[in-house]
Amino acid sequence: MSHSDIHGQMHPGAAKMLEILAEAKRQGTPGLHQVSPAVAREMNLRSKELFGSTGPDMSTAALTLPMRDGKAIAARLYRPLPSAEPLPRGLPVVVYYHGGGWVIGSLETHDGVCRHLAARSGAAVLSVDYRLAPEAKFPVAVQDSYDALVWLFENGTALGLDVSRIVVSGDSAGGNLAAAVALLARDNDGPAIALQALLYPATNMHTTSASHAEFTQHLLTPQAVEWFQQHYLRDAADKDDWRASPLLAEDLSGLAPAYVMTAGFDPLRDEGKAYAEALQANGVDVTYQNFAGQIHGFLTLDGLIAEAIDAIDATALQVRRACFAAD
Image (cartoon, rainbow, N blue to C red):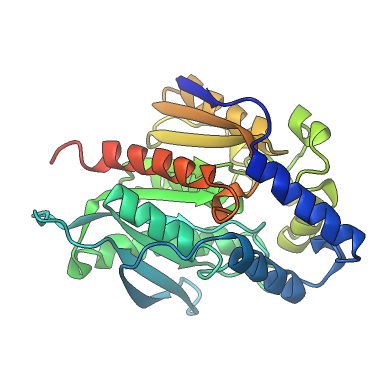
């Protein structure tokens, strides 16, 4: 398993973000765990507008994807600007699941991330608006995420996409969903996945790692983690379900190659690294990268944290290696 640490001290932009949050708290702004999901979603979108970039211009299309229960979810397809040489088999595609603790986050909060990822990888990106908790509790988000992959596999060719080169990716809760989707695809003889790109993923609902104990004031607080879990999970037993805690899956062999990114000052750091190590121990090809100076959620804060673009570049490099090597 290749392993790289980027820097050591907290990144100045990350430190600035924590200062801004601390000042907001002093001014009486409530934490996520102190408000309703609806208000938390508004706060999350406002944060993106304040601290995230809009990303580069490109073609986008609004899609509606049918789900197994007869409902439908929204998705957005990003196509990078055409290169001089069109690909004969169509564009590879990244299926992207946004972060937000399965409760907040949307196509809008991660619009910039998806634009940057498409532009820098050369692949199309399908951003999936899976249903959120508590309106839709576990395992609905997992089912929606897998159904979106299957829909893409069955319909992507007509959209000019190369469904033989699919990446599943996501950050935080979205990384959790991408990991679960990779397991489901293996177990259900589903679409072949070229790469699972897991960006500071949640992999174990039992938050017992050292990094959870160490980083209690770094954006993702213990109170926020508990708030997310209480809204998402039906009961404590769900924590043991591998679809919620992929690290607890009995068998991780035969899975798609993985890129696992963590952040050094993130409560989720150790469980992300543990998942990378468990994948490797099961014979999966893994690249692990820790952005040692970063905090949880930094990918959507690129207006304040320039290193977010470096991290998206690192992800894009893995996508290119997985999808364009044969071209």
